[in-house]
Every structure is written in structure tokens, then in C-alpha cells.
Length: 357
Image (cartoon, rainbow, N blue to C red; front, top):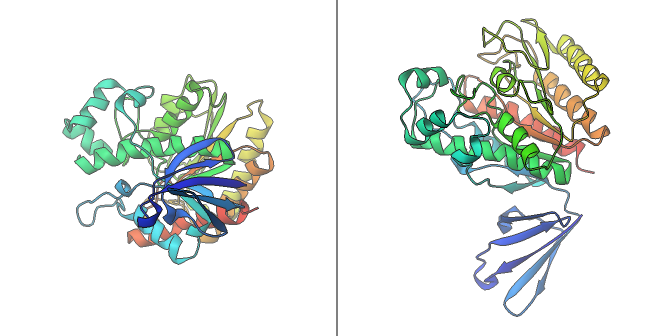
């Protein structure tokens, strides 16, 4: 792979550059995202940076993702920046090239969400009932991160179509319905990204493969009539939501299931999808870590090794079939945000090992 871009005002190292990767994409990034091997070609007023063998996986992250919350709130609002720090400390961040999404607009999100609901989120006029259902108090930060994260998954999907894999360090907000949010989910990024790709004619068919411990009820209900989007949810049968929706394929996992039972059902699920006539142009993978035995909202007994085996099996399955994959983080709830972020880092470790070649 070869990429080249121009660094302006190189004497002061003030860098905003346009990157061309494989001739497909133009994005703005900073030189802080670059690492050797690369070399510089000086021109009169700029430097041209040429990167050789740029095997980095796109990682979508925004500084707005962290959400300040009251002490002891169940949602780990700081896990996003903590994940980046953990990836850096483990030497995994060097496998990725970071992108920062622009916030989605209400007009864009109207393809999956009700206008009145969008306006209420944007203006801060959510009812107490809405706030209670979401489980997060409205704030400017909540609004900003929700619009940014929705577009982050779309950006990950667009990049995955070009590179084969892209990871969103957020997303998987599958409980958001068309006219209300729920379960710590404001907007449904999975439904939005899938439908947007098809409307933009970037894909004809999308598979949403949801391995969060909770069923993707909002995704299933929003997309119930979308024949070009296949929704699959592998979830704990006895967990939230109490009233399940009907996905195209639901795989209920019994409470207390461990690695062996879960992975057997996962294998069977992927075989069922392969046996259908649905061949996706892209997979959006919700890699929730709330399946972990120590998760506070999980009810399953999976280990960290089991989560790694799950991610490895899912990613390898679709890579072998040459189907691009966009990953989202999904849920995870622990004693500390650091504990949760560390579990999320498993996915990025697996991506780095499978897609390094």
C-alpha cells in the first residue's frame, strides 16, 4: 500500500494534510498519526511525505466521546479515552491510523430517527421519561457525543469498504429506537450507518452482526422492513430488554453460559447466515464486552480468552470470505472504567494480528 500527502508550513511543523490512500479516500489527519517507514520529498513551500507499506487499520475516535457523569453512575463514560491510552501502553496503537468524524446532522439522522425526537435531543427538551429511559442525563456533552458517534460508525463503514477493516472506538448503540433512546443509547448508529450506505449507493446489502450481551431491539425494530439489511443478534435470553424485538436472526444464549457453549452457538449462527442467500457487501460488528463473567450487567460467564476467541472467529470468518468489516465497541460495565476499557482492547489486539498482512 502506498500513500502520499502534503505538509504545509513545514518549517513550523503546523500540519494539516490531505491523505490519499489507494486512490480512494481524502481525509485530514495530523503527522502524529504517522510512523516510519516514511520519507520526505522537499518542494519550494511544502514537504511531500510518502509512506511505504502503510498497513494501518483505520481507527475512528473523537475527543468528545468521553461523557462526564455523576459519581457511581453505571455507564463508564471515560472508557473511550482510557481505551486509547491502553492501546498506546500495550503498543497496539501503532497498528492504527486515527480519524476523527464530523458530527452527523439531524437531517442525516432523520433516515432512521423521528424529527421530533431529533429536535428534542438537539435542543435539550427531552422529557423526564425520555431521559429516564435513556439512563443518561441530557447535557451539551451528551448531545455532541451522540451526533459525533453516529457519524463515527458511518465513517468506519465507509473506510472498511475501501480497506477491508475499520474500527470505531465507540458505537453499538443498538437500543435506540426511531422516536426514543434507551439503555444508554441516544441514536442508533448501526441502523443509521447501514441505511446511509445503501442510500448513498456505497453498498447494496449490509449485515449487522451484534454480539453485545443485550439484544439489539432498537436496530431490529427500525430496520424491520429493510430487506437489504440483515440484523443478527446473539444475546443473553434473560437479560435486558425484557420485551425482545424480532431480528432477522436471533440467537438467545442461556444465563450462565461460558466460553465453550457461547462459541458453539456463535459458530452455528455464522453457519446459518452462510446458508442463507444473503451475501453482504459489508458487516458491521457490535463487539460488546458485557458478555464477560465480571460484567455488572451481563449474566454470562465468558472469560477474556473467550472474548478474544469470539472476536478472532468472527473477524476471520468474514475476512476469509473477503467481506469488509466495520467494528463498534458496544457495551461493557465493570467496577471501574479502566477494567471495561481493558476488555474492549481485546478486539483491537485481535484486529492488529489478523489484518497485519
